[in-house]
Image (cartoon, rainbow, N blue to C red; front, side):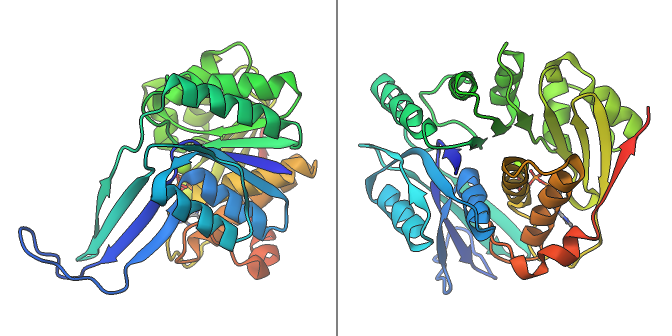
Length: 312
Ligand SMILES: Nc1ncnc2c1ncn2[C@@H]1O[C@H](COP(=O)(O)OP(=O)(O)OP(=O)(O)O)[C@@H](O)[C@H]1O
Ligand SMILES: [Mg+2]
C-alpha cells in the first residue's frame, strides 16, 4: 500500500469562457469541478495502475466534503484530518486559448491541527510500504514541515518520495535524514540551486553533484517532452521518450511520481523504474483529464522509452 500526502487540497473549478469580458457578467456552460491537489493526482494514477493507495492530508468544510465525495467515487481510500476551516477553491478561466487562474490560499492550520495531523500520519504509517508527498504547504505550517514527515517515515524504514519546490524542498534536503527520492523539474532544480541549469548532460550532472543531493537515493529531474535526467546512487542516466500527441501535460509530473512509486514498490530494476515513471507521465499528457492515464497504451509507450547510463 502506498500513502500519498496532500496538505492543501482544493476543488479545482474550470470555466470555459471563450469571450471572457472584464467588468461585465460572464455566463458559463460546461463548468467542471474536480478534487484537486498534486497528491490526489498521484493517488488516482496509482489506483489506475491497479496498486493499493491511501490518501491523507488536511481538509475542511463543505469543500472538503466534496473532495472526499469525489475520492470515494473513484474508490480511493481517504483518511484526511478534518478541520473547522473551509478548504480552498482554485478557479481556472479558459479564454482565448489562455488560462487565467484565481487560487485561494486555503486554511491557516493551528498548532492543534498540526499535532492531530501528525498523529494521523503516524497511525497510517503502520500499514504502508511507501509514502509520497506532493505540492505546497498551507499557511500555519513552517517550511520545514515536510522534514518531520520524512523523519517519521525514515524511523520506520519506509521510503518517501518528495515532490515540492522552493523553501520546502530546500529544507528537506538540508536535513540530516534525507528523502529516498525527489522529482524536481528543471525550473525547480534551477530555483533550488540559484543557477540556470541547462538541459545538457554537463550542466545537469554538475547540478546533481551538489551537496544538497548527497544521501538522496534518487533524483529524477523531469524535463517535459525531453524526458528526464536522473541520478541514482552514484550513477547518472539520461532518459529519452517518444514524440506523442500532447493533449494536456498538466499533472504529468504527478503521474511520473505515481509510476515511480509503484515501480520502486515492486523493486523493479533501475531501467524499469525510469521507464515506468516516464510512461505514466507521458500517458497523462496524452489525456485531457489531469491525473488520468489510459493503461491500454502503457506497454507500447514503455517500449519506446530509452534509458542510457552516462559515463562521465
Ligand atoms: N509534452 C510532453 N510530451 C511527452 N511527455 C511529456 C510531456 N510533458 C510531460 N511529459 C512526461 O511527463 C514527465 C513529467 O513531466 P514534467 O517534467 O512536465 O513534470 P512537472 O513539470 O513536474 O509537471 P506538473 O508539476 O504539472 O505535474 C516527463 O518527464 C515526461 O515523461
Ligand atoms: Mg511538478
